[in-house]
Image 1 (cartoon, rainbow over the protein chains, first blue to last red):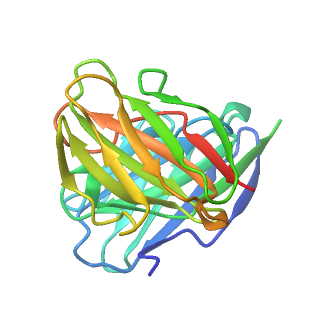
Image 2 (cartoon, rainbow over the protein chains, first blue to last red; image 1 turned 180 degrees about the vertical axis):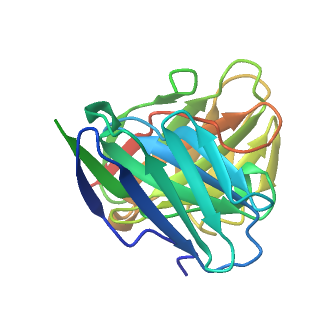
Image 3 (cartoon, rainbow over the protein chains, first blue to last red; image 1 turned 45 degrees about the horizontal axis):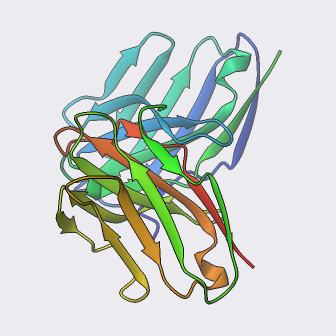
Length: 113
Length: 113
């Protein structure tokens, strides 16, 4: 029962362009959403979050959009840089504690110089 | 990321042996979570511990798996009589308050041969 889905296993983008990573979820009770970035042989690193009371959250080059009616969120990276090449996971939870997070399967982003 | 220490980084076990995975949380963090990433899947919650207590083990297989977080020393995830299906990356995360997962370790990659 994959409650959080990332349907694109990989994405390639030219440096300087926008990267858009998508995530869909099935549980309408989810009220907190996060994006993590993971380099090979490292653990996930928290990137940005959004709660269900918002539809957008911005942090520098990273913006997360939440569409609750469509049960969809996306991460926009503008402009994309080669150092952004990594696997990106979205995660969702009911509540705020670490034992309630459901992760997607990840999207591998390659930013081409 | 460097604050949560997991060892070993790689562990090879033959079927039927025991695997012990260690996690030292960040200084001052008393909440530890274990997640597992099977090939081609997202991270899945296994167990949530506070010092000397298991708070939630709903994600842990009922047999062969156990976890502890003693008053002194690291948290240990123990897998007895390993099988090929246990091959995965095991990640530990720590938190000061039991909130969202900001800090993951680098993971232990278990290979069962």
